[in-house]
Length: 396
Ligand SMILES: *Cc1c(COP(=O)(O)O)cnc(C)c1O
Image (cartoon, rainbow, N blue to C red):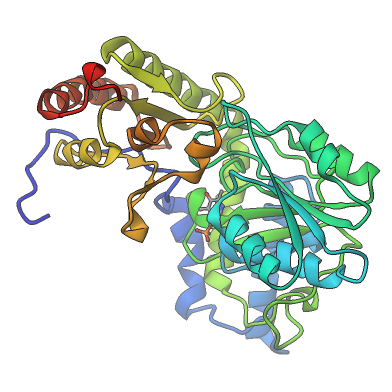
């Protein structure tokens, strides 16, 4: 990265990976590092001050999803919230049954937690999705057994943006006396959420995906639902998650939720317009490209396409040289370049899955950013294809 060229524009289109902290959020957090540094469990004014700040933040997080403040537990992020929901319910209800239901297209924080529970002796059904990444509530209904104790299905799919029918799935779960968890990390702040209306018992949110700081998140736990704590210690967070609270992080997360709720209707519409412009522009300007994910039941900030005959990775490197940040559906983090489990579950061939590119929009993006991407991407694809041994004639 030392010989990076100086592109004329920098365009960050990876907001599903993480977002910058909003200035208002940072300003809200700053006093709680040094000045207002108390431990919220302490019985003195420093402690009360911290406790009050946490209570305020709890109200703001609750309000984003129409929950009560006492139904919000603070955690270290989306991954921990998913772990706590799934393991916490599995361990608290194992006398009732050992069967769990999830989908093939969950985030690894959910998928790998279920796989770990299989090793503990739980049985897990991984329901499939259709070619748009959509899960059929009837498949969930058919998977339910007498010993089913938990269903976990995500709200907005993080790679392809498909919005799942969680209200219907929640209704089915409730009808059968099964608890329902949803990972709403990608949808919170983008799509309205009402935990009661949507029949949700447990819901995961993460701060750094909605312009709050990293390392903080929340789990909504409906009143009356019991969890076995996964971190033991003091009596923090209704005895369900021990550890001295991350007060500055929680304050920032609360402020991020308040702002996200206030901005939601307008900002989501703005993002959806930019999204549609980017999708249409790519499909119009580049031959042999397919849109991944659902055409309409889609997160407002997600664009995912497969560029045939190419590797997503090589396009990413070239985009980065031009100042554009995106991501691909290959798990390069594992060093293996395995194609995404989500794209494979949707029925894409390995080749098409390897050519996937994800652009996720956010607050900083403008129409000019989209124009810039539509100007630099087609020549990159053309150049790479001219050098590629693959192609329409190669049978791939
Ligand atoms: C980012 C993400 C997570 C993990 O959240 P962290 O706060 O980064 O641990 C979980 N689920 C989904 C869908 C995500 O996009």
